[in-house]
Length: 312
Image 1 (cartoon, rainbow, N blue to C red):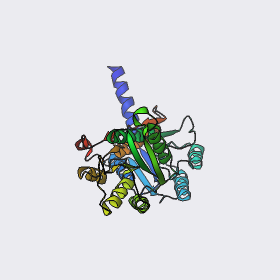
Image 2: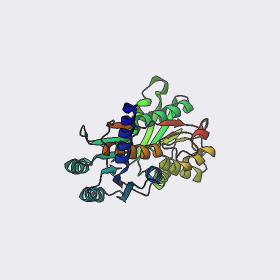
Image 3: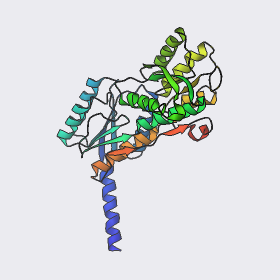
Image 4: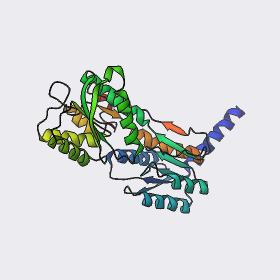
């Protein structure tokens, strides 16, 4: 009984310590649907817990501004810092600043390219390679293993764009998908308008493909917008174009219901946001953590659409 009481008291102490936390959150951008869901998930997880204070900052996709924000968090002596990096290949100064101050650092959604220190730093996110693999495998199935596909990549400064694209191309090396060729691939900016602009250019050049896949839903929706503008039929089948995205946002779900988007991949924005906050609290309480906390991707098609309809 005494042992049980001691354990309960210890658990209570850890809970109190973990919740007595001032945490800085540096987001790459507030103007992004997926990242907004992630940010709001952190915010909602902290609501009703007065001992958890979150301070959000918007880098507006500016690397220098984000570093200044992190340095300001360090100067304030916050208990932990969560960063959704503007550029996954430019995180070294952020890591160094947090490490020098002994402040727990959690990267979320975009995994730094740098090798992270063995302690004091964690990453919460999803395996980008899995996303590209799931997406292209389903597109291959819809095309019956043959045809031509164009790829709309995200901004290549982001590892997600590079890895998702490589994964998709690797799928086409499999025997069952070897009849599919990549006719063209161009980088967008993760936005709907950049996806629409790229496809408009392809249409002007005489677009002749069976599928267009994009590294995220916003660009896929832009592609759909451009294709609908010239009355191109969407979907699998003769004369139609399969469009695929990644993220399973609410707008993507609407497009899938309308038989415009054939496939997307659910990236759990809320799960990543909650996971980042939970990891920060554990690090503040000096509880053991995994250096990489993986939130799985999941394939979404019209067949299982209802399961994911309101999750992002």
